[in-house]
Image (cartoon, rainbow, N blue to C red; front, side, top):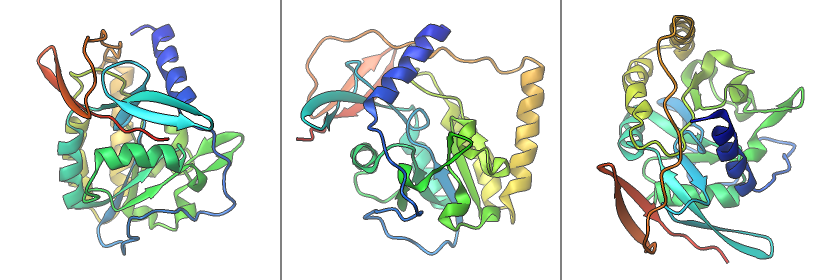
Length: 252
């Protein structure tokens, strides 16, 4: 995917999300119970980590802005449900998104409709700014940093706790993507450790060495061609043998 197309996809996503003024405290509102931390805490970013939201016709998701009703489409990253089902057995899974609650809740209610996989949700008001850059400061959440990690496609989000951050490749439309599956063995090992941070540091060093050696190449994230046909409330479509799930949600 060209740099121009990638930039256009990122810009489209940002235009979908509503702007959010940051609160002065770390309090978040959520219908999910605030569980006592017994397992380690796996914090997951939402957009471009688990899903991608776009105006492209494939996956249906309707979102309204003040005075305007718009229809958008949510794409689920390949293997996202298998990933969530496995990590929910190992961790207390939490979503920490830079998006606002109204937007994020609609996507998460579709992703985890029975609220069995994700125990809590943190939104944009749980973040802060550091030298003008939005960051997800885990200290504001009062978590034990030895027992918490954040998986995010944007390294700036965990720049204050780099030893707790796990970068994942940004995802847009590629249905051949297997990044979530690739990450699972590492997370399984991390779940059994007393302190997650040394293991994350070793992984980061390994990734840097691999990058210097020209190891892993960036996968194409070019948008798929539009398919004909109407979107039902729940539909399945095939593209190159891969099945895509979608669910249409309208907000008035």
